[in-house]
Length: 221
Image (tube, rainbow, N blue to C red; front, side, top):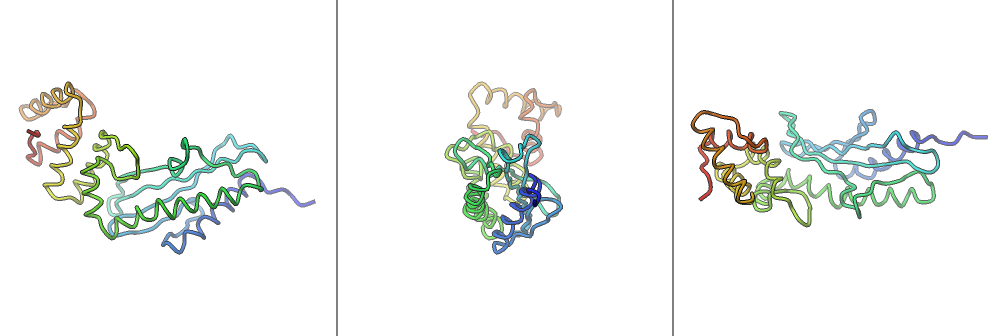
């Protein structure tokens, strides 16, 4: 009697199938790292596959994949997103059952090709548009309701690749969307840093305020 494939066997096979489907889109698969990599301009996009130790043979084999965008030269990660966030309630995939596995795999491949690939490619073909969208919305991933506090996460991208005007606009966007009491706290922390380089009382401000002072970015009017 032939041995049944283990969860690890199934996981590795599924990774290889997804990688083969994404190869025409410019991704190179690194089997030992369980990830696919694509270079676009100054960036490296990495799609990583993951599972979980709680898998149960024949009934549950968790599968998820995430994508991150990295500065190829510095290694800095600008953003990270789980592919499951595009699904209803963010559920990961269960690839344990052979009867439904191909359907699940097809969904994963489609999401990578339809959601991840266009986003990644834009960094290589139209970075200026990426920066403008980031500044206008406070985020640069497909979301129905972008959350303004994510501006802190895009500061690095805008600082590294944007103009002085874009950096200023990005900082002002963040400040204007703070609640009124936090805007006042930001102002006081900003002025204290200008006077004596005192660290901000709010941890979230400790990155942005020194950057603004260093680049002579004033508070929004």
